[in-house]
Image 1 (cartoon, rainbow, N blue to C red):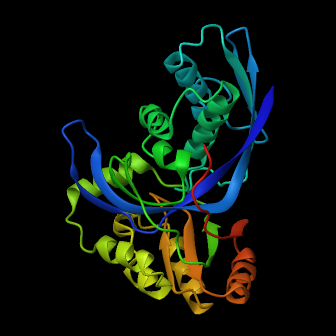
Image 2: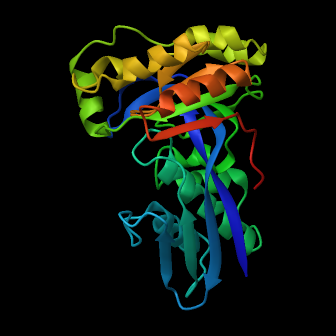
Length: 289
């Protein structure tokens, strides 16, 4: 039996780091949003204990280094399914190393798919707990929608649906080292923070402009000097009518929020002249488990 899941990308509507934890991780506070850009993940069961993954991108690993394979192995262990295996096929659309949770979303899709294929042995909360052991973004990616994420990202408070809008997402040519950015953030005081409480209130009030005025990502202040694409892309998005623009995650993808599709399409066309990965997307609600 085979099933296919959509693995939706995520955007950080805000990203704040509030401290360093005793376990070496950081405490974060962020509003996260699922968007329509997605990978396709197909999963079928095997009875020989073998887990195999394949993707349309040759440079991605298909062994235990792939989080989708790790997710399948963790699921079978938690469900006590001995000799269970899986064939996993991933058609990638979400940019790699972009801060959009592409790998985490694939792992979350595998967990949802296996849960369905094996008779739903786990609740949403149990899947999120299982996912937290695999990666900080996976718990959010399992259920998606709009949420306030705290702790390492695994403490989730669901929020009302994000106001209707369009996202233009641009992946620059460079990628960013997440450990390097966290290290830099530890060395310097944070100069500016997002108004996360204000964003939550604005989402509840369906006030898109108020959300966008309060967006920020603290990692933009510690980017290496040479990646000047982030402010350049933000400037183009704002010039084309975006209500707000920021980098998502630890980068390097940048997005703008538009209240009109025509403006969003104009921005996408303008940025496509200089960048190879430019996407138009919209918010997605909670996913079915």
